[in-house]
Length: 239
Image 1 (cartoon, rainbow, N blue to C red):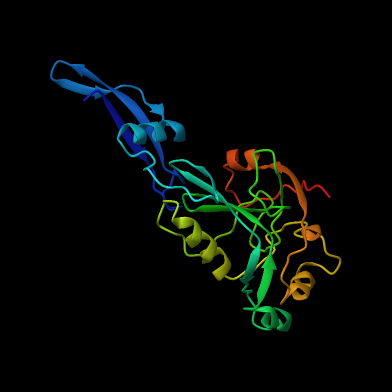
Image 2 (cartoon, rainbow, N blue to C red):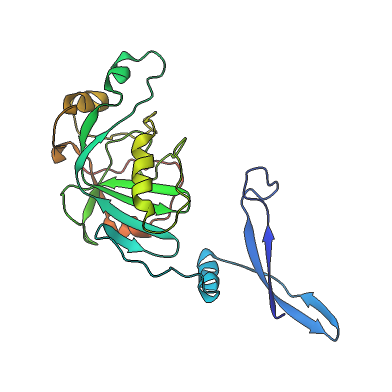
């Protein structure tokens, strides 16, 4: 044995004093028949990915659908053309407007998804075409999504499958769950009557007007590199 890995903490928030697990790498020092661990080095996510690849657990060979934009051992990024979908809202027990909207079909803009582990990020696209690295993105016109693109998964059923076949499962889970709250986002859409009025006006329509989307300075390349999965807002939208 030449090296050893030690895992500290637990994966749950009950793992006091370490709220999140971490791994250290130690050289094994041999003094005759006695072995001891040298001072540890904190393992980074990239070091762990490299180790997994070295163990033969790199990305398996797959036929990538045209919708897939990026595929790594940890992440899948894909886009979804504009289409009609049913939407479900939490009626909060007594909100008649939400009850009347629940389960109806609405037109949706082209969307951009990124899945990594149990986290999901979602953006909208201004044009119904495969985006490029420099394509500017838009805020999605949905509740449960934060300014940084991360989606509050809440009661969503997280796909366990990690291959590209999971992209339809992610999309289905996202739209089959209820949209429950605004997530503190300053501006989801550009519509004078507000969020609910916009969706009410779109019920039964065929096309989502791109003019309703809030443009962002973020590009596809920046979206891919961003690994912030915290529920936070930065309120830096372009008009």
